[in-house]
Image (cartoon, rainbow, N blue to C red; front, side):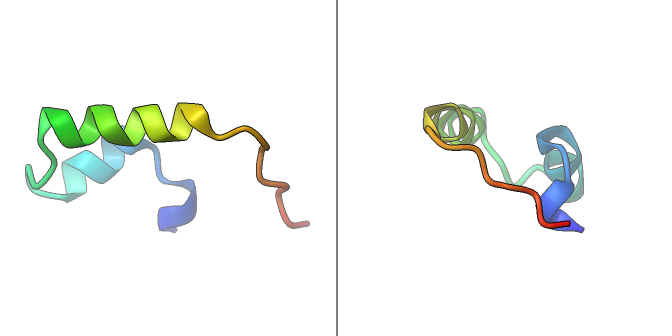
Length: 41
């Protein structure tokens, strides 16, 4: 379930455990990924 969860849903379920800095870092790391993960069929 968590594998396909949008970031906004993860933040909502975390009960404000994510700071703005943590979210920015997570988004930047995701944007740096060079090769997309192949979806398993």
